[in-house]
Length: 269
Ligand SMILES: NC(=O)c1ccc[n+]([C@@H]2O[C@H](COP(=O)([O-])OP(=O)(O)OC[C@H]3O[C@@H](n4cnc5c(N)ncnc54)[C@H](O)[C@@H]3O)[C@@H](O)[C@H]2O)c1
Image (spheres, rainbow, N blue to C red):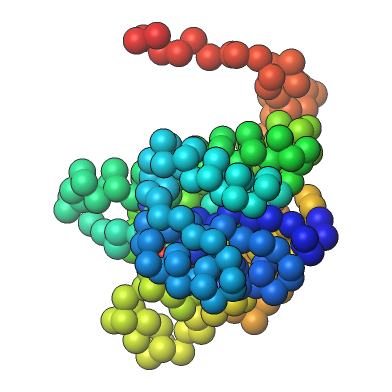
């Protein structure tokens, strides 16, 4: 996709990776709607790039739908969605996990991407196609003992993106994830940043990830999870394949099953 003249909605645009991506896409000629729970922060990013801002809780499907409709109207259609809002809870010992922290994180990290994709797909279909990027994490591919529930939420994003992408691609919508390693943003507290510095472990800048997002959109593939690491160009992760049924079948789910309503819905259906 050629970015110039396009429109985009970015969630989590008040800070860090979302803010850097808003600035990067604006510099490429994209008109950006900046969305964040932090309304004042979203306004500040929008002011920096001469664009528009919306306050919304991206863990709420209702608020996501409303903000996509408002942005679509304000920009005259949407070409790009960057579903980036997310949080971590930093709880490593599962015996100390409280329900509130768990559900608060899953709401924004997982529900935000699922309902954000639904809203984006509807808007992009009206436009005739486009691109969606979800922010997962390196923790969506590898184990991350300091925050196993965060790791689970990002694995969910990776599985969702890879699974929904082929159906979206048939509608001309190309969806991928960006999977950053450690990046110097507000999600890391100062103590953690200091520990990385002391260990001589480089942190990436948010601008490095924003560049990856621009590359992903321009590349136009789908179902890929682009890993970002310090000092390396971003690249799609090369997933292995699971063993198929013994005896010659490929193990690939037949398309007729993939497009059917195949599940029973469970005991309460
Ligand atoms: N920084 C890293 O090391 C790193 C690494 C991998 C992935 N990520 C992911 O990158 C994404 C962006 O995080 P960041 O590092 O820029 O952190 P950040 O804290 O600087 O930015 C996150 C933004 O999301 C917003 N947000 C949080 N909950 C929200 C909600 N319910 N509704 C709307 N907005 C909400 C925050 O207000 C904030 O502006 C997150 O999904 C995070 O998990 C970060």
